[in-house]
Amino acid sequence: MKKLEDFLSRFLMPMTEKLQKNKILAALMEGFIRTSPITLGIAFITIIGNFPLPGWSAMLTRAGLLDDFQAITNGATGVFSLYVVYSLAFSYAKQLGANERNSALISLASFIMLMPQSIPTIVVEHGKNVEKAVGALKLDFLGGQGLFLGMIVALIVTRLYAYLSTKKLMLKLPDSVPPMVTQSLAPIFVVTIIFTLALLVRIGFGLTGAGDVFNWFVNTINAPLNKLVASPLSIILIVELLALLWFFGIHNAVLQGPLGAISMAMVVGNITAFQAGKPLPYLTPSVIYMGMYASGFMGFVTFFMIKCRSAKFKQLGKLAFIPSLFNITEPIMFGVPIMFNPIFFIPQVFTQLIAGFVTWGLTATILPITLNPTMSLLPWTTPTFIKMPLSGGLNYAILMVISMAIGIVMWYPFLRIADKREYALEMAAAAEQNTATSEVQA
Image 1: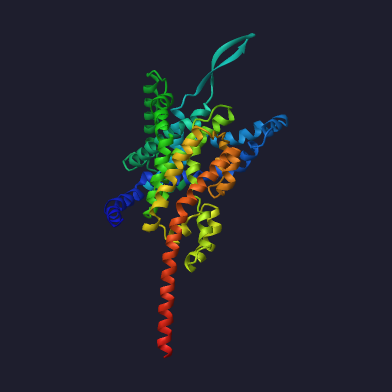
Image 2: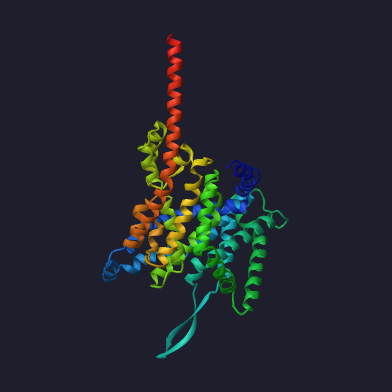
């Protein structure tokens, strides 16, 4: 363990510091955090519109309300790429010291300019069905399919805007002109250059077999990338990496940006398919993730701590029990501590790994899961024992119990060892204190 700690101190910690200072990663993290009011704001409405009760959707349909509920969801997740482009560009511009609002608006405009703006459909003309292109933007590209491309556009356009703004391309206006007008008119030449580049990109990809950059990106990059990063094995390895880093004091927030992109692509893709009545494209990875998440539920750890002999563990368990029910683990991680504690290396690092493979095996064989992905919009503080049964019914609840049982089996023996050690230290300290008091009285 000492050699591993030395290795991490020399190599991993400096790398982590560099990651934390990386402007793109910082912008990704902030950009996705800024979109959270949208996903959290629709959570309650979306859950009501897709409540997991037999006949619920049929009842809403008969009442003429189902389309209204779905419209609210589509207004958020259906065009989620638009919010990400604006928010990410805004955050990245702040990192670069450029005008945030200009960067965000120009990035959003460039994103839409590159998008196909007509959709072939069948219309009735003179009593005959005629195939005709109508002016429209495809929701698929505004939602999950356009997410990664939107992130790329936001980063490139914002970086280009920041670079060109430092050159002698900004329009000079008299000081008497109001600042708001100056900020709007000064970058006119810069914006013209960026939009011209967007036009050239659009023309260039129009000459390819895909017909546009969106279809090219989806077919060439997006689909293979999603299969790679959102595959069952990849999800297991990513969550395992987070557990390992957390043991060595590296918070999950370090990788929040790229992980947020992956998770939101899965969420949006699943919800879109669910509302269209299609199979969920990321069903197995999503189930595996929640199975691993359930095994890391710390509520049972704090409960066992309350029963410990050690006064420290007993008091810490009482203080951390309620937060742990809502997935807030920092009091335990820092209070025990679990980080850098050799006793807890095995449960912290290997519990979720075991649960991931067990979950994968069960769902692929004897425990198939039918998932309601709209429940993934619930806040991350929603207790796991509430979220999983609502999301997948009885089978998901059984999977949750199995995953939590794995966590209990993995954590309990090591917690007993730690409690025994801590209790011995407390008894030794108490005995030493009593001896010192006796000597003073003597």
